Image (cartoon, rainbow, N blue to C red; front, side, top):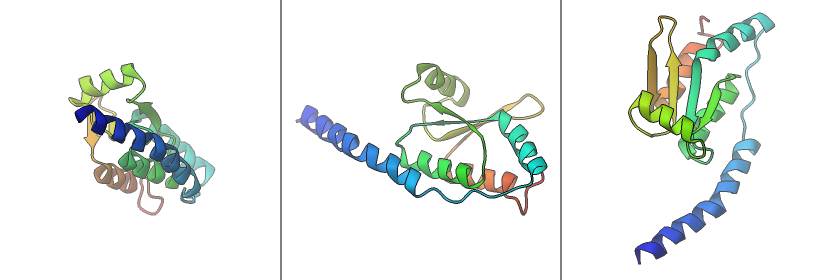
Length: 134
């Protein structure tokens, strides 16, 4: 019975994964527009950020949508298919849970932020054009 349940959920994931990915592309928000100099500053600030994620995780999709809306070129690390990224997440963050934003600070410290709502809030506070001081 246990194996039957496992294969059932694998089948559901196989069917839903393409639907979720297409839905993400179709429902992308319009990116914010910044001046060239402001966008260059945002690009530099994003060099110290990396999002550890699964492609079809709904919470990861939510964070990627916000990244797209804010026009943030944050590196994506697929911990589902990349063992090196998975090990880096476990070693740095302490657990393999996605989404997780790795924030490298100017003083050399690294923060690992879990939870999609916390990540979205951090990105909005730091990069929203009206309130961001990049």
